[in-house]
Amino acid sequence: TGVRELRKRLPHEEIIYLGDTARTPYGPRPIAEVREYAIECMDRLVTHGVKALVIACNSASSAVLRDARERYSVPIIDVIMPAARRAVRVSRNGRIGVICTTATAQSRSYDDALAAVPDVELFTAACPLFVDFVEAGITGGPELMSAAVEYLSPLVHADVDTLILGCTHYPLLAGIISV
Image (cartoon, rainbow, N blue to C red; front, top):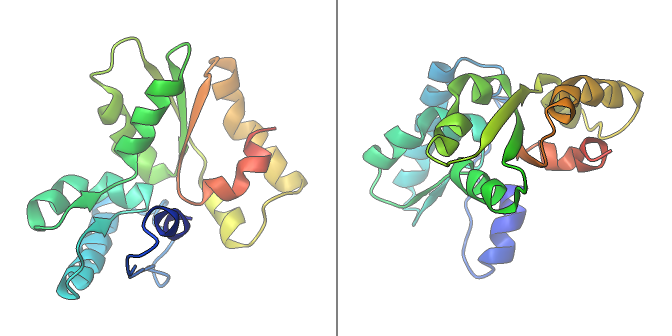
């Protein structure tokens, strides 16, 4: 999903994509382990002379963003701040929900991103099975719908009017999530 968006916005740039398929998904892993893996991947990309690094995984962004900005001399683009800024812009009642992996939820990276914004309340729901469904190629059906209802009900009851999809797998479930 991230590469597709980059190609739309930067059609003439060469994109080097590194997907850590040997160790994914990162979401259920401890933050320290995600950090180690993400640094290893970014070190590899930097040795190839990239112009910028896009950390297109919310769990990796949550684990490594500060370190990456100190470690590398190229621009670092994450997915946390842009999503948080957009949510603030479109929210009408200041009640924003974020659905994410366990690692992202535990990192509290979205809480940090929105901490200084007045009149915003964040409601976070870890949705670990969503990644498993996407990885298995399942984007619909009764089991997924049941998980979605379980995960999203607290956010509906909290009257959130804006939902951040805090995992790059989750846009593939937009149909189920929006029901």
